[in-house]
Image 1 (tube, rainbow, N blue to C red):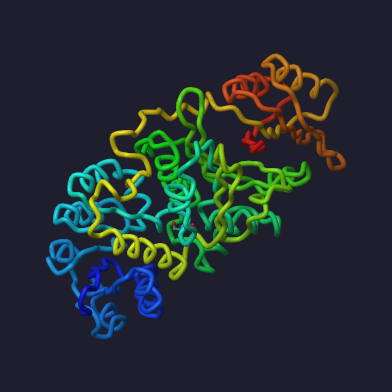
Image 2 (image 1 turned 180 degrees about the vertical axis):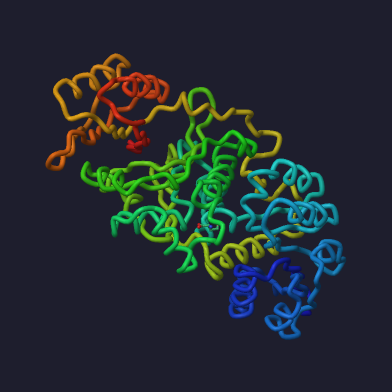
Length: 438
Ligand code: HSE
């Protein structure tokens, strides 16, 4: 070990752990010139010790039990790349209790248990750094917490899950159904064998929760997030949206609202002219609106070994630079001073305001459109765009597709309930939200 090196214990030598080892080894001189001291992984822990030994080739101690890292007096910082909320939580809390700084990529852990973890870190005067937890290699935490610190942030909207963005891009490009594209994504290694967290929007909601906390200075409120994924999205809605000039993206959205904050993840129509609508494949992008800076957007790889390692190592450098600083002089974990966090609630989804896409399966006969538009008018909902698919020959039913101007979600839900009761409407409507980002 070099004299004065920051001594790092790395728990979890999977994809990101391996990338962290590789980048730190490859760029050690450059990183040292920035950090002012060497940063050295002195010990690693992984259940697969043989793999860990092969990777580190005698340059770090190899342990089977990560908890030993948390308790090791020869380690200054631990990197948690174990994942999940169970053992990872115990490990992080144990490291904090031992006065160690923590770097983690674990969005689920922070979104669900962050309040407890940050309180423990505050008490111990240690850092918990988490740049890699949101949008992988994109330095969005740094941007929100430091670069935009002058601003009253108004909203954030992000494509923060690469798996679902890849699936949506493929569905649009090839006109294929969700199930087929998901299998392809799994074959290519974009989607996990169990893709639930990704495709059901949970992973994006973890990341949106973290961004909301640091943008608005509120505690983590993952349990209040409204979450809808893409597994029931139909290829025909992507096609119809495109005909109307929109693309469908799974967005994580958090906004200020008169009664608190909005925190939601759902498939969203966005004008195809907007930059974010053109973020394709597994890429991530986060769009932030601040009152002073206006619109800013951050784009890059949201996953992968070295992009995520880039964020992990940036956190290590931050720790190295402020290791000896008075804890009160460090950047607060959640950007705002801990005693200045606001108790803003997450507003229920019924209270948000949005434009809406509605697809209805209807009988092709006189008066159908009049009935539908009357039901919308009765709820004070104004129609922005509209079309009816020409029925195939011999077919007596068809799809009616419309987009509304902004209205309250409750208004829209009431109108849809009444529309679905019409005898000419043959199935439950498909409702999707549309954002203008005006
Ligand atoms: N599974 C995530 C994604 C990457 O598909 O973007 C890690 O958060």
